[in-house]
Image 1 (cartoon, each protein chain N blue to C red):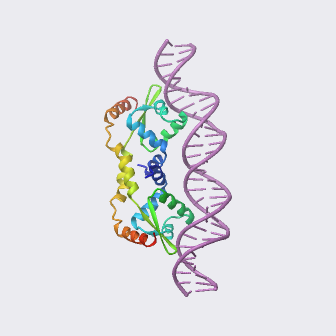
Image 2: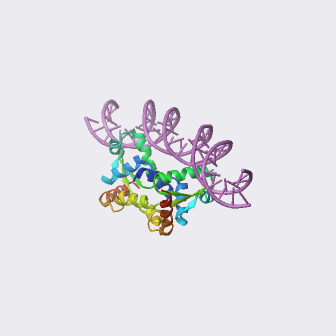
Image 3: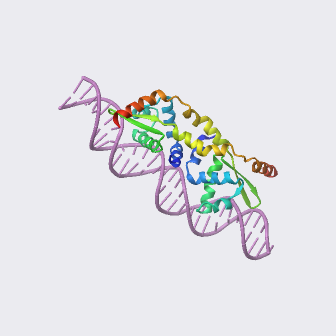
Length: 106
Length: 106
DNA sequence: TTGACATGCAGGTATTTGCCTGCATATTTT
DNA sequence: AAAATATGCAGGCAAATACCTGCATGTCAA
């Protein structure tokens, strides 16, 4: 998994909205997704390409349509490998120092 | 919490490295952080400003130094409010459809 | 007080990004 | 086959981004 691509992909609100849309209804076509995204089709395509590069979305061709499916695995991996360690960190010691110092000056 | 700022802040590898550095040793000065980040001090400052804007880092002045502290709360909030719903989603029905369709063409 | 040190401020530039339009291709429908 | 539909490809532009350098300010120590 390329964590950088995942974070980059999530860094844009349009792309997060695309994931939201696919979360509501998986397997939507490009056209369907465009209906909810006040911008040109080609822009949506580019966003979807980035999501696909991050492996957050995979596609299936069905005739002239292209169906888009969300893949939650990279999200979970990013959380498990990266976010988690910040959550359960014992920052308390230095956090107390910080709070103390803040009390001095604020 | 401004989720957009948090995602934006996390979208850059340098800023994630800054969080990593602060995770290893909280309360570091700008100078200390620069030592680990092969780029000009001013660039690091700008990255730290973005992290602060996302409330991922808070600072305390101590004399001529500026101490940087990591704040894991926005990370947890982003996970709880946004990432989580993708993890425990029942994408199975349509996922099965997708798998089936993939089988047809691949 | 003077010099060394830590950071702040103000631009300047090259690259990336997000968006667009115009035309091409592929598939279905009539 | 021809028209309608769904998507792909190529290029172009403005704004944002990630860097930088040079100078200013504030703080500590000799």
